Image 1 (cartoon, rainbow, N blue to C red):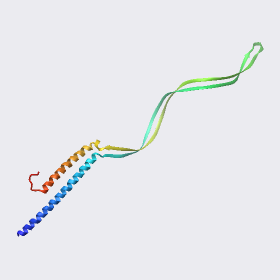
Image 2 (image 1 turned 90 degrees about the horizontal axis):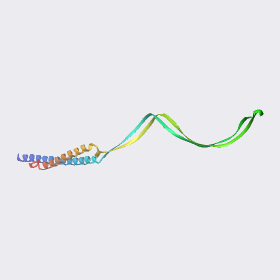
Image 3 (image 1 turned 135 degrees about the vertical axis):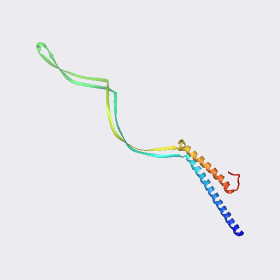
Image 4 (image 1 turned 180 degrees about the horizontal axis):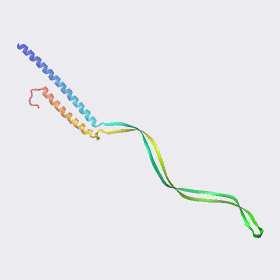
Length: 178
């Protein structure tokens, strides 16, 4: 009977040692996962949200554009005149005579005048808009960074608790640790 009791106690101790090893392995795996998660959360702080917004749209435009301008029109030219003018002359008792007078002249023209233009032009069209707009938002400049800091702090506390758990699993009978 004693041998059976010792054998059963040995089986229980071996089982407890295996359970302790499994718990320590699980604790180490969880601690590694927390460390990896903290690395990812810290890396997000340096990240940038990038997206390309594709805009394909037709924009109707209907407007009236008024023009109120004064345009200065200069005229600089010469006008050549080459003609014959018939001039009737009344000579009293002698009667009326016609005299052909040849005229040859060059008349210089040097004018400048202002032409007012007051006109409204109606414009009605559709402008196709097909553009890709790149959007880059550094996450450090968003409110998301505050949440990432909170997640990192929570993961740090969880990591500290896992480290304390290792001491309890290694020496479960030590009453000094909390």
